[in-house]
Amino acid sequence: METLNSILDAIDGYVWGVPLIVVILFVGILLTSRLGVLQVTNLGNALRYMLHSEKEGEGEVSSFAALCTALAATVGTGNIVGVATAIGTGGPGALFWMEVAAFFGMATKYAEGLLAVKYRKVDTDGKVLGGPFYYIETGIKERFGLNFKWLAIVFAVFGVLAGLLGIGTITQVNGITSAVATIIPTGEFVNLGGNSVSYSTAIAGLLCAGFTACVIIGGLKRIAKVSLYIVPFMAIFYILFCLLILGFNFSRLSGAIEVIIRAAFNPSAVTGGVVGTIFIAMQKGIARGIFSNEAGLGSAPIAAAAAKTKEPVRQGLVCMTGTFIDTIIICSMTGLAIVVTGAWDPQLGLQGVNITMEAFTRGLSNLPAGAAIAPVILTVALVFFAFTTVLGWAYYSERCLEYLIGRGKKKAILAYRWVYVAAVFIGPYLTVSAVWTSADIFNGLMAFPNLVALILLSGIVARETKKFFVKLESEKN
Image 1 (cartoon, rainbow, N blue to C red):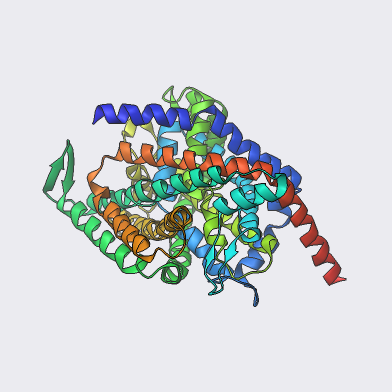
Image 2: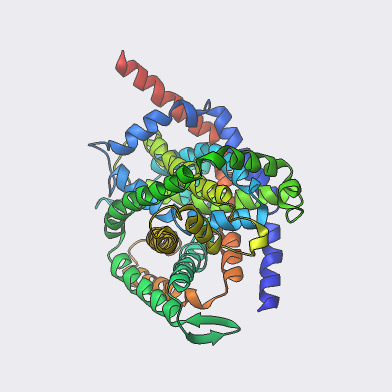
């Protein structure tokens, strides 16, 4: 197992090295510049469009339902475990770089949503297939006359692997079962390769697999319906408790922000040498930020393409709010709670979800029985966040597979859904280190083809955006 972890770490180091981090930031900065800082100037419009769906337009679900499906996939363990992992290994400064990447990532997510709707395919029965594979194949061919279908296939292959073996299944269920085992400790059920699994872990994994099967066998509309109810409720539930923690520690908040900023540029001065370079803080922050909000990854536009809309720009703005909600709001809340309570301190020897668990235990200790109920509150949030991510990625990876094998292969798609459920089932029996490293690798490999397309099609994005707002202004006059 140590050999496997070493191999995965080496691959992860290459995939998430300087080139990918530079390209992700470059794409975000390029689009931000070409769009006139649209993520600031049009955030109000984006939030308004998020809540008011269009009455006309082709598609399968409402714009808000499409956003909730995308948020279901993004608001998951990355917001709770991923933030803690970033801070635990990259220091508090990782949160700063996570926010920087998210700011520019909003422009990236906008472009992804716009292109997804512009180049989507809609059947006569109203079924939609869209996402990076179509704007890679069709968009680049229309713009430059180049055949990039091979790159679209590469994206789809990595998308299937990311959903089946990475961010969509194993990491999410591993986060769920680890949290459940923390609050419900039981005896050892099985020991596989030195990885001990308790009865509570095994039962939680089995239940998660069962509920996943009940939902994903029903396809997109059932996934969207479940997400529409769970995602908004759980986001509000989690944010309220984070605000309570920050409220109880308000006097320490300014100091925590100062620590985050100082650690972003001089990690060793804050961490006592545990984190020595800015690059490590940047790498961990950006990698975990992308894992959480998926800006540049190319996943959210798969859901955006299914929205009932006739305006690519409008759906792009709705899509952009996903990164704002996921990272600027929810990840920030988690990170501030961890730093303000001191739960990130390396001397505590905590990792992953246990860092966030410690933050909640300390932060809610002022409530009656707060220290006792904190782990339960966090576990409930984690379970629902992670479960909806499993659902969202089931849809993403299935659409990638459908692009590879062609439409109408109902038996193959049904078989894939059951294989996906099986991947959820085995998640608790894999080691945490290998799980997160594998997810990082597949995320990075998905990003490369998508980022190439975004760079090549940035002119189309800028042109469509300008045309939309000129039309909007003329309608007002």
